[in-house]
Length: 451
Ligand SMILES: Cc1cc2nc3c(=O)[nH]c(=O)nc-3n(C[C@H](O)[C@H](O)[C@H](O)COP(=O)(O)OP(=O)(O)OC[C@H]3O[C@@H](n4cnc5c(N)ncnc54)[C@H](O)[C@@H]3O)c2cc1C
Image 1 (spheres, protein in one colour):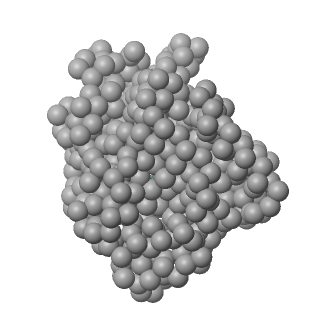
Image 2 (image 1 turned 90 degrees about the vertical axis):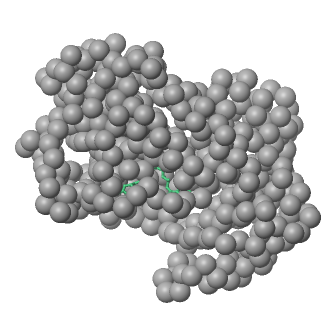
Image 3 (image 1 turned 180 degrees about the vertical axis):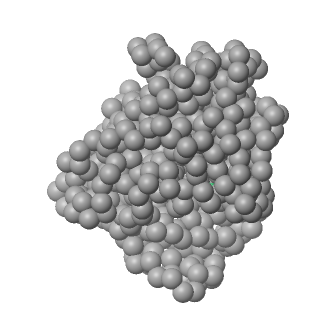
């Protein structure tokens, strides 16, 4: 292991790493590069850490990094490790059920699957970053990126320079176009998402309370639609993500208007809609947004026309590695790879980015090594993100299959595989996604091509 939570790396002259954004990926990157022996400074546009955001899942490829970074004990009290996985069709038929899920995940991958609220994750990462001495600047919107001498310019005119700039300003990044030198506009996927969070303390309905008391991940799959719910806030809340075909309308986006809209769209989901609509009766916070693809635009030189004409992304040629040119800048997190949430891997990919960069930088003791380290980072992360994007598309097709022969076959396979002791619903996919060890992979790549 190149570094551990309590020992800093041995670089004689620490690199100055500037990080744009203060979301989970930016904070994780700051922690990881600090533990690698370098100095991290964060510039976040918001006045303070965002106080909203609903549920997120972190599978073992993500949670194992929390242990490496000294975050396990900080996050454990606000996380839930679901003990039950439950899959239903939209009309309410149970398709599959897996008991002792928590034990099984631990046994197979050595680290748990956790669900939590984004705010809790963010607070934990923030606390650990501060403990490690990361300098975090709020109200610091970055408007320019300087390539000649790595640095940034803030809205207020301040300029800051370092050795490396990590841009982690999210899906709607304004910086990545500047970094890559071409306009990049994430494209709609044709779907939209609704998010609701329900406080258990507000629920009177006994059936609903029973449903929400289970430490479960509950999936609803059906033609064109998909929903997933799980406990967050250490089990005090239940968070539901609903994905439906995009009919996004701007205009009145108050909570009550969105809830009314959801109610209409859920009316045919019976009897499942009863539990979902019962949840809508008590929900206080709700959000909706349009899903977009980002990764292919970001990593490759593709025009939006090329992408929108290409449904099968495997026919798109691999993207050139352009992040680690002479600019001494890398992209990380959603800004580098926006992936629709059918495998719930966006957060984990960002955590893996952070770990990969930290590991590769732990071997950098002089500035002359930096271009090779960032080139390696780019290669590792681009191929991982592409593979995950492809798997996400396959998985999405499986989950939202139209009713018919194929769907009946899927339902039968699901029931069989989930009832067998040694099998999983999608064993091959899960194995390579969940057992990925970002430190090990980066270390292997470094040993193959040391700098
Ligand atoms: C407020 C918020 C709520 C979210 N809620 C959910 C949710 O409920 N469920 C879910 O699955 N996912 C949610 N997401 C997305 C999810 O958190 C991310 O997919 C994932 O955590 C990856 O994080 P990231 O750090 O790459 O990007 P993000 O979490 O998007 O963070 C990017 C950060 O960069 C900052 N920023 C943007 N532009 C600039 C700039 N020019 N200069 C400086 N800073 C800038 C933003 O303020 C933000 O804090 C949310 C994201 C945000 C920002």
